Image (tube, rainbow, N blue to C red; front, side):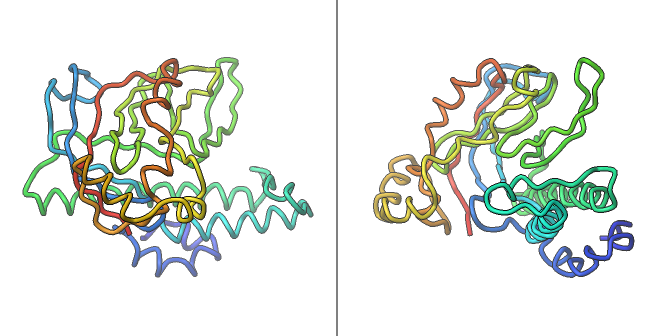
Length: 270
């Protein structure tokens, strides 16, 4: 809350109050907090847990309204500077050596740090409520941009929209649906995929199509059969609206190695 960006970037000052008020909240859309268990098949130093089953909490949240406003503000500036229209405007960019580009880079990284703090607060509160001390904490970014260096020595910007880092040594989580497992993975460092993997199962259809296709009773019946209790949530996030996570994982065997699985039992969504 005391970061210098709020003093140095005029636009961010207007977001500070909501930035503070929403800290430690999950948000809507596909954001969630799941309670369940993790199954570790074999010991890995990267996770540090012996084989077995562990009580676990899995959350997915972002930088809340702050990140959304940062995105909209600088996208609008980029479109205006480049005078792009139609679908081409979606590809608007800012030069990193421009004032606006430097502002956006700083604001984006602040949003990423905000998301990290958000997760830690949510998990700290839950650990306190459960009266438990975490044995391991795994976290990874997605929908973000990273400065990385290629084998050739060239520094580039990698935008991972709908993707997560999967470099050698990277540990992350690839969620499925509210009724299927999430996978704890470590990256294999596949250069052809820019050291990346999927950040989830991915949708089969849009939210609107899901609402028109499925019913609440269908979803509740299926969740009951899978032993999952849903608190909140809507039909747009129905498990039927997503791809089969097991098939998705099969298609990225060359990108990640599976270290364990998380199985949801209680799912909390807006």
